[in-house]
Image 1: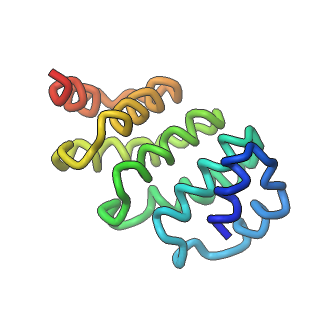
Image 2: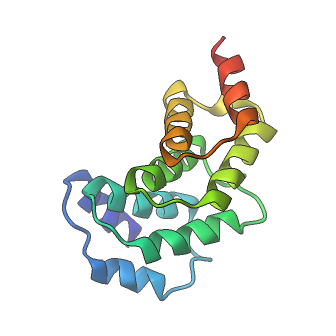
Length: 139
């Protein structure tokens, strides 16, 4: 399902409200990190608002015990999607920022770090430790 929605996003096709509503009614426990990232990315890329879907995915990701299963690009895409969609989710951004600052940035490509920094600024979320760590990594 997430790959289908991702494909819709690639061609800027409206993934439809019905598909998002289907996901909202399901448990997200069986969704892999890439699937969660693909879904929010596709909706944001297609410019299709679905606040309930984004809120459900944001709450799910923010409530996970660990973000370690997420690849840097998946976290970057999630932050980018929420900022692009104009859907604030402070708890999600805090979890992503805390996760990034807790580890090494060695696994993050510069594009992922740039997207995360852009997403935080665009969403109006302050995370001084994250910005310092990204800045130190660039220097």
